[in-house]
Image (tube, rainbow, N blue to C red; front, side, top):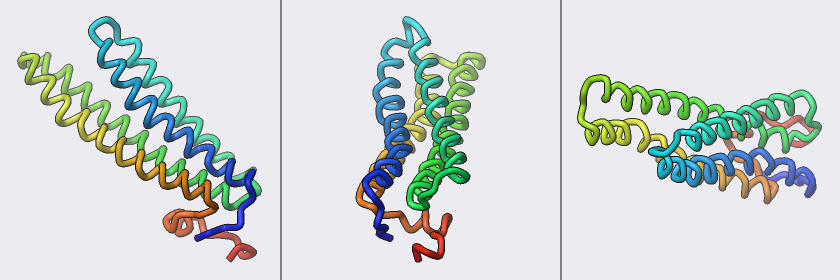
Length: 168
């Protein structure tokens, strides 16, 4: 659905999509690779990546919840709720697959598995599905950000957050 949104509304609609994209691309791809290269020296970069991610996701969720009460534009609110829905999905994936990855890594060592087998199990069952999910969400969020820039609202967002009567 195409909406006649003003330029400031379009900029505000893109805001949370841009933050989520930053979290996915910069934090979970670039910082994650940096953290992996430094993991033998320190686990602080990995902890920093987790802290940044949880902070950004929390910010998105809080702003989207606040938008339900305070945002005058349905267009902006709709995009923010859609970004929050994806942030919630990503947070659940992050917590579930991150916990699984840690359990496999430390569980493999506790069970006396070889180092190579532990890394293979950890990467194959924990990290690989997570990174595939990140790449899928990057594509979806780029599209949502592009739609926000062009004054469009995805059909799924309209189904979940129907427009007010004056817009229909």
